[in-house]
Image (cartoon, rainbow, N blue to C red; front, top):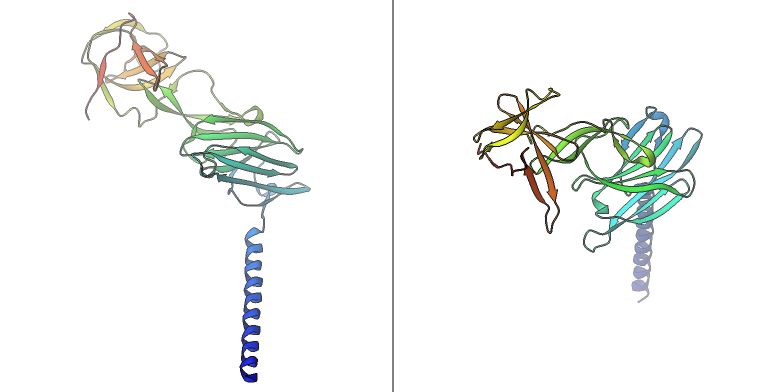
Length: 286
C-alpha cells in the first residue's frame, strides 16, 4: 500500500509539472501572438497608403510620439451585421458595420493628417474616417466604390465606379483623399469612359433613330443625323446626368439620352433619341 501511494505521488507530481510547463509555454506563445507590430512613419514616404491587418495590434511611431492602434472587425452572426472597434491614440470607438469581417483597413497619411479606410472589396463598401489625436472621430461616412488595383498614393487612388451606359457599366478613375477622408475624383467634370471589358460587347440598332453624331470621340461639336437600323456600335462613355455616347464601327460617336425611372424592385431604364422616341437596339451575339 505504501509503495502504491509513493507511485501515485510521483505520478501526480509529474502531471502537475507537465501542466505547469504547458501553461508556461502556452502563455508565452499567447504573449508572442499578442505582441504589437511596430509601424514607424519614418519608414514610409511623406504621404502614404498602407494596407494593414484587421484584428492585429500595432504600435504607431510618429516622430517623437508612439501610441496603440488596432481595428477589430467581427460579424455578430445575424445576417450581414457586424461591429468595428477602433483603437487609435486616445480614440476608443465601437460602431455597427455591415459585412465587417470581410473588410481590411488602409492607413493613409496625406496633407499632414491621418485617415482610415475600412474597405470591403466584394461589395465595394468603404467607410472613411479622419483620425484625430483626441478622443473623437472627425467624420465617418461610407461610399460604394472598388479599387481596381492596390492603392499606393493618396493623391492617385485607383477607383472603379458604376456608370449608366445602356444599363450598368464601370469607369476607372483616379481619386484623391479629400476633406474628412472622403475620396474625391481628380477630374470632377467631363466624360466617364467605360472600361475595356464593357466596350467589347457589340450592339445593333433595330430601328432608325434621330441622334447627335460626332466625327470622333475627340470632336467637340456634332450634328443631327438619322442613324439607320442595323448600325453596329459599342458602349463608350457618359457625361452629365443623361448623356450617353456610343461608338460606331467607323469611329464616329452618337449620343442618346438615358434616364432611370426608379421603381421596385429594380430601376427601369429609359433611353430615347433626339426626337424623344425610344432608342431601340439589341445585343449582337459574339
